[in-house]
Each structure stands twice: as structure tokens, then as C-alpha cells.
Image 1 (cartoon, rainbow over the protein chains, first blue to last red):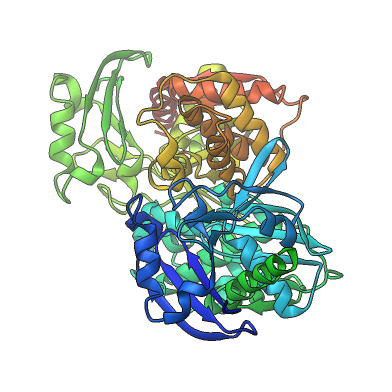
Image 2: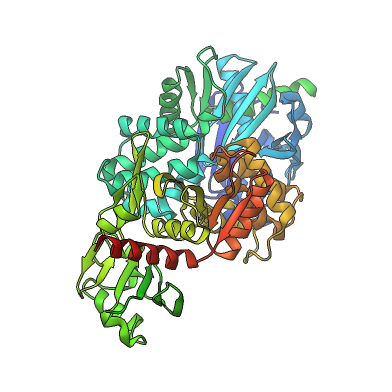
Length: 299
Length: 299
């Protein structure tokens, strides 16, 4: 048996695979545009085979998949693991599939105010980020289409909540009346406009109202069209951060995401006087590696 | 000279005209799908002529137009009247056009927290609603794509603010991930789901977070697809009302709009223990009539 790991981040629109060596280091990576929405039922094994074909040792290695591949629309549904959820809980609830030694990491669910919340894929990034930072308690944000704010205590995800920040930005950007006055491409981030949008969101504390300012500032020529995407981005991120109860005394917030998003969230957190620790896509590999380690402990 | 009035509500997507008699009563009405977006520059006189062709006395009558017809994309731009703005201020700033005796009612602007806010057409409905109710001070809401909350004191609009409630509802309904689990048509209002969405918006105080509950409630089969549009409607209206600082001691809020919207806002206000006074589309005719009266006083 080979003690490395094949780690796969399989989301809605793409698939990323990595070959990790016996110490968890990335030996090779491969990406494909075969997100789960492009894969017919029954074809998941074949697509995984194609994604890992360059790695001849794959047949003997453990293969862990995280992300929407475990959803109802994926390979098989891996039922959500309830909070609080740690490595061990997740390892115990892996959904094993054929071929042998391939398993899907379950998502995590929690409940607040009588309403469920869910994530799938982010739980793996959370564990990976903490492993990489050597932390077992932290506050994290995973910005994106649906941003997740996560609290981890003693190695277990205690609670989390979702904010549809990236999706609202895209809706306003592409489909709202504001789209008419925005340039076609977002261009470079304009820090002053970003901060203006961010602070206005905090002051007004209501996105339904704040968003209209993008229209009137444009109507009265008080903001250039080129600054508008940055203004709107600062606004939706401000609206998200407004509800996190952040304060100067807080530990650094771990921000897991692309360089562009970790930069924006770092900037936004700094405006509140809160430090941030950015972690990139390596978090997924670290998380899958940590779960594999946990699995060996159980075995 | 005929002392009646031709009143025209000319918006983005439609035109409604009314012949008012010498006491301001509606003698005839006519609607056309000729909103300003369908009218080429220079063709506004011709379209107005067509809309009022059935009324032979029109040539000698005053004709007042309100709505987006006074915007940059309309007949001519009628510059916004600054708050506080009353009948007299608006009458003094009418934008007269050719043919003679045709004038466009200016919109109103105000400024809060360094950001302008605007309305066009709603100012006329505000004055009309107050005239119909015999009030000279009130709090009003004009729900719609862009809801306006308006404070009137001693017959003048003191301040107002816009909430993009209807537009956000449509964005979520049609273009967001939530659209996938919603039925094609909204169907009848389900009061329990409406109230549930309304209260959840108040509790979470953040639409970016609250909206995701529509996804998870559906995912865990805790709400039927048919109830979802009502849930989402209650949620966005809750998000709007949350920021109005309403309290039990408040006077009735005047709600100006279609029967469907005044019903929903009345229900929402009642959930907060606040009374509402509904007024329909007759508010526009009442407002234009009041401005005409003001004009006669000046003349």
C-alpha cells in the first residue's frame, strides 16, 4: 500500500486533483472543467479515472473527494455531519464508493434560530487551514459566492453561517438597474471607492437601501463608472462583515480563498482594525491530508 | 379656458392619462403601453396627442405629467426639486414644454449621510394621498421596485429614502440560486410563510444571510416550493421595515400602491403592531390635481 493520497476538490463547475506524497506534499496537480453539473449519473468513476490517469500508482492509494460531489446532484449523497464536527467525526462519516479506497467527505450542517445552514467542501478547507497554521481554535471566513463564517474550538467546527455575498454582487452587477451604469469589466480594485462602499454599508446597515446609492452617485456624477465595481464590492463585503460582531480585541480572522478575495477581505478587516491571516487553495489539500491521517489513526 | 385637468402618469414602461373635471373627479381614463423607453426623442408630443385624442377639449386644458417622463431619458429633464419640498415648490419648478399648457412635474431629491436620494412620480402620489386623506403631516411608504419611505411635515416632503425591495425580490426570484427551487409563478400569498420570512429577516438583520435560508429550508424539505415566494416576499419586506424605526406608538403609515402591495405592507406593518392606511392609484390624479390648484393660486 502506498501511503500518499489522491486529493480531489470536485465542485459544481470544475475538478482539481492533487497527488500528495507520503508526507502530504503536493507532488503533482491536475485540473479539468468537469464540474459535477457536467457529469451524468454513473459517469463519476470514469471522470475520476481520467483526472488521475497520469498517476500510475493511483490504484493502490487512498482517494478523498470533497465538495459538491457529495451533494444530491453528485456521485452519491454524503449526508451532512452535524456540528460540532471535527476530523474524527468527518472521517467516521466518509461515504465510500466504488472503486475501493475512494471516499467522499461529507458536508457539515448546523442549526441557528430554527433554520439549518450547510456547507460542502469548505469544512475540508477549514481543517486544512488550521492544520497549516497550527491552530485548533479560530474564527475563519471562506469568501465566495456563498461566504462561510466559521467558528472552530478545540479542533471542531462549532457553528457557521452563510452569507450570499458573491452571489448578490453578481446579481447587482449583471442583472440590476445598477448594471446599466457599470463598466463591462471590473478592472483593478480602487481602494478609495472600496472603502467608501464598505463604510456606507456599515452606516446604513441595510443593503436594500445602500445599493441605491450606486445609482444616485452615478446620476449626480459623484463617482466614476470605473470606480463603481469597487464601490459595490466594498459595500457587499461591508454588509457581510457588519453582522460578524468583530472587535479590535479579536484574534486574527483566517481568510481562506483566492489571492483576490483574501486581499479584499484583508483590506475590509483592516478597516475594522481586525487582523487577518490569508490562506490559499492549498487549504483543501491540507484538509484532505488531515482527514486521511485521522483515518489511519482509526484503522 | 376649461378649468379641468388632463393628468398623465408617464413612467418607464407605460402611460396612464385621466381627464379630470372642474372638481378634480375622474371623467375618463386611458392607458397605453408607451412608456418613455418606447418613445424616441422628439416623439413625446405625438404620443401625448394620441393618448388624449378622445378628449376634444384637451387643447384648452392644463396638462400635467408626472413620472420618469421628466428624467434624462424622457421628454425633457425636469431638474429635481430639493427637500423640503411642498406643492408650492413643485408648482414653481414645473418644466413647461410645447405645446403650451403642458408641464412636467419635477422629481424630488434629498441628501443623507453624504449621498443623494431621488424620486420621480412618487412625490405626486405623496401629495395626492395626503390630499385624499386630509393630512398635512404623515409617514408614507410607496412600495415597488424601488420603495420610497417619505416623511411629510406641514405639507412639505422633509426627507425620504429608497429601498430596492421589489428589485431584490425579482433578482432573487429570477436570477439567483433560489430560483431553481421556486415555482414558476408566485401563486396566492401564503400568510404563514410570509410571516415566517418577515420575522426571520427581523431576527437576522442581514439579507445576505437570511436569503440563504430559502435554500436550506427547501434542501431539508421544511418548506414547500409553493410557499417559497411568500416566504421570500415576507423576507424582503421585513428587511425593508426593519430599518424604519417603527414603533407601536406611531401614527398609521400611509401605504400608496396596488391592492396587492398595500395588502402585503399592511400585513407586515400589522405584525409590528403599526396601523396602515392604504391608498391606490387615485393618488396620482389627486396629486396632479393639487398641483394644478396650487398653480391657479400662483397665477
